[in-house]
Image (cartoon, rainbow, N blue to C red; front, side, top):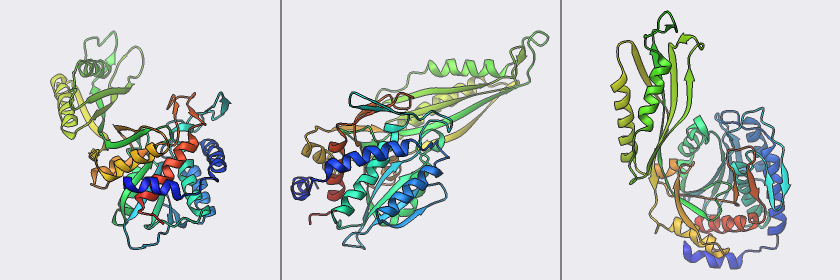
Length: 384
C-alpha cells in the first residue's frame, strides 16, 4: 500500500481542500453542540444520519444501539470493503454547558476533540470522495459508532463489526486529536465493580462490627500497594468509590470501580488474579465481597511492517509529518482482536481531553484530512 501513497497524492485534486477544512470545523462544532453521553447518542446519531443521506451515501441506517451506517459503493462490489469509523459518544452528562470559544488557533469546547472533530472528519472524507466523483475500487462503509467511552465497553463497535464483518477486510478508526500517531495495537482492558457487604449497625452502640466501607478502603489500600508488571506494561486505577448510609452508621454496602489495563492479555490476567487474591484475603463471614465484570475490551495488534500500518505512516509522511506508532484502547480493539487489520489515526491535534476546557487546533485540520483521504483511498485499493 505504501507505494500507492505518492501516486494517489499526485493524482488527486486538492484545490477544494481549504473549503472542506472550513466545513469540517463547522461540522465539528455543530456535532459538539448536540449532547451525546454514552447510551444517549440518538440525537447526534440522527444528525449524522441526515448528513450521510445528504451526501448520497447508500443504505443509511441506524441500528438499535445508535450506530449509523452509510455505504459508498466501489467499482468492485464483491471485493472486501473498507470500514471507516468514528465514535459519537462523549464523557459529558446531558446537562453539560457545551459553549465553545476560539483563541489563538484553538477552539475550546467539551467533547470537541474527542470525538466531534473525528466524526466531522468522517463526514469530510465522504464529502470529498463524492464531490470529486472518486469511486474507490472496493466499497467503503462509513460508520459512526456509539458506546466507545466509559461504561459503553465498545458496545457500538462490537455491534457494527459483527454486522459488517463478512463484508470488510480493513478498518480505519478516527480519534480526533491523534494526528501524527498511528495506533496499531489495542491494549487489553478489564473493568470490575467490586462490592462489599456487612451487617452494619450504629457507630457507637455496635462499634467493632465489620463495615463495608472499611472493607472497601482496606481493599483499595491493598490494590494500590500492588506493583504491576512493566513489561508488558500493566496498569490499574480505582476510578470511583461508593457506599455507606450516614456518618454515624456502620456501612452495610460499599463498592469500588476498578480499571485494569495491559499491553498483553497475560499481563491483564496476572493483575486481575492479584486483585482477586486480595479480595479473598480479607473476606470473612461478617464481610463478604462480590466481583462483577462490567467492561471487557479485548487486545489485538498489527506488526509494524503490516501494509495498513505502513500505509498510515506513508500518508503522514506525504503531508510532512513523521508518524509515531502507538498502542491504546479504541474502537479498533474489536477488529484487531478478531484478526481484522485496523489502525486508528487522527484529524488534528488538541489537548485536555475529557475536561471542560478541551480544545482542538484548527491549523492542522487540513493536513489531517489530506492524510485521511490518501490513506482511505489506498486502503480501498484505488489508483484510478
